[in-house]
Length: 234
Image (cartoon, rainbow, N blue to C red; front, side, top):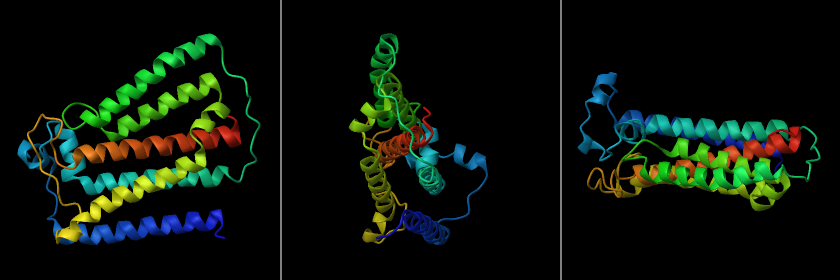
């Protein structure tokens, strides 16, 4: 059986290998990037995203965004590995007062709704996957504070969440390399851009935002759970 340390070393090695491979294919397929003014002058039709920021970081600069996602994944893995060497603490089973529970019951669903909006409409209005994932994790944190960590972990078991997080990351990376199956370079756009301003527009930016939101949410929850288990902190 592979030890936890072996999993960490293997995962970091795979990330490094992916970055190197993607760097070579990126440099071989795309010209050198110009100055910032070049990206600001990109016409809307190039990405199909009414949100120009989303069009840049999920289309023109998608390579950079993928590196950020991998860095976040390694950070989550590192936190869980480091804290796993600390003894687990006994979490209190008592929840907070009725005032806190009521407030969490109101703010939690609103935060999840805002998170879904940011992920779904991030290509046509302010928002995006990273912000959506952090907001969703904050909503679960409200519940954990109000109802107790034990009750929250029963709904979101860390081990299952860790498996789901890895699956989302693999699916995201598979999407990046999918154009190779069609004889095109990685990171190439496969979906139609649609009409700018419509929900089904901007090509792959919409699914990228949703996948990133889920990835960030799961990773952030794993960090929260690790600190609660080994430090007793929320």
